[in-house]
Structure formats: C-alpha cells, structure tokens
Image 1 (tube, rainbow, N blue to C red):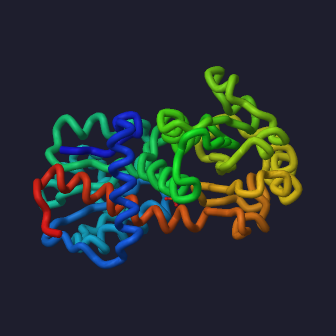
Image 2 (cartoon, helix red, strand yellow):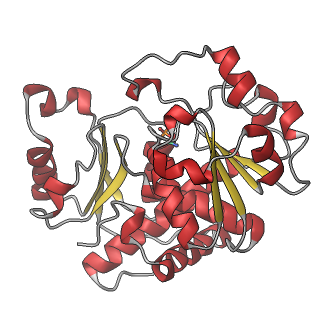
Length: 299
Ligand code: CP
C-alpha cells in the first residue's frame, strides 16, 4: 500500500504532483465520487481540524465512513492498535487515518496490513498532511518555494509540524529559520536561529507554533504574558514585517500567547486559508493512496 507517514518519504517531484492534485481540487469544487470505498478515522489524541477536514475530504470524494471513537471502542478493553486496525481492515476499511500519541506508531502496522495508513500526527514525530496544507498555502501565496524566507517560531522541539516542515521546505528551495526559546531547539538548529526582532524583518512567512504543554516533562519557566512579550508575535512586531509577508499557524492558536488576538484574523493571517486548504490536500492524499491501492478509480 501507498502509506502517507512522513514528509521524508516524499521526493520533491512527488510533492509537486500532490500539490498540483490538491490545487486541482481547489479549482474544481465539483465532487468526484469514489464509490463503495470505506474510510475510517482513528483519533487517539484530540483533534478538530485534522479529523473533521479528513471527514469533509472523504465525503467530498464520496467515500463511506466507518465511524470510530476511541473512548467507546474495544481499545478501552485493552485491544491493541494493531488489532484495532486489523479489525477495521477485516470489516472492509479501504484506508485508515490515524492520530496517536506514540512516535512512529505506524511502524508496527505497515509491515502487516494491506491497506494504506495515513498519519494524522504521531506524538512529537510527523504530521505530513499538515505539512502538505502549509506547502499549498505558501505556493498559492508566492508561486514558488525558491528563496522564500520561512521562520518557524516557538516550541520547535515538541512540534511534529515543525519536524515535518523543516526538511521539506529546505528541499523545495526555501530558506528556513527558527526562532523562540533556545531550550526548545536542538543544537542542529543553532545555525538557523534568529532573535524575534530579526526574524520578523527577515520572514516572508512567520509560521507561529503553539506551546505543546501536553508534551512537556518540565513545566515552562515563563508565564503566558512573559512568553508573549519575549517570543510571541504582537502588533508592534508584525508592523515591522515586509509588506507582503504573511502569518501562518497550524492551530489551535493560544491567542495572546504565541500570537496576538488581533493578528489571528488580520490581513496578514493565512490561518483560515490553511484550514480550507487542509480539505483539498486531504482529498489529494486520499485519492493518491486509493489510486495506488485500487489502480484506476472512476473520475
Ligand atoms: N493543526 C492540527 O493538527 O489541528 P488539530 O489538532 O485540531 O487537528
């Protein structure tokens, strides 16, 4: 099966093809039904955007849904992730989307299952469909990735979004920088680090990240107000951005922590465009894996 697990698995050529497919869905709002195929979304961590935009994408493509709720499933009785997905495969799922708090949860599944697995986020690991929707949004904005300056700012260490985007953006030709508390960066990112004042003047894209408190083992020293002042993007700093520079954020946003409340829906913000693009890239990803799995699909 053609799984979608990490961005590292995707060549630059394959990424461009997927983005063209997603843009085609953006430009052609009519439905393209895929008949009598079942999708199941298995979310073992909270989600609003990823779960619901996969559901919208599946419905837009005409897929039937096998509803799964972790809290009322036999996982509560101790059934393993593997046995759960094997059960869904046996029942007739043609594709499963999984979010799990365990890094690389998919490794135990891809060897033994015969249906595509799409990673909806694994722990601090990867979030490939978030990365694709970020790429589509940047491509729509600038028409290219070459020499676009992207600053990823905030809790890099715990962010699967940062991990998925850092490498792929560089491979696509962007200049990638990081900003935020240095204790949340590995040494390998030292050479990319910019203080916020320099970051806002350098960036074509300020990609702000939520502080992932749920993954912290040590409580953060700075409170929300201090963090906002030192590392957040406020109106004063946003006013120093280049005229055409934009603000992105995978969301959910902690307003007035990493990003000022007034900037979330400002002219510079592409946050809700990212969410809209999430449906198109998930349609493209589903279509990609099902085409690989089933051969020719009806148009
Ligand atoms: N960006 C993102 O993954 O949002 P959710 O956690 O709401 O799915």
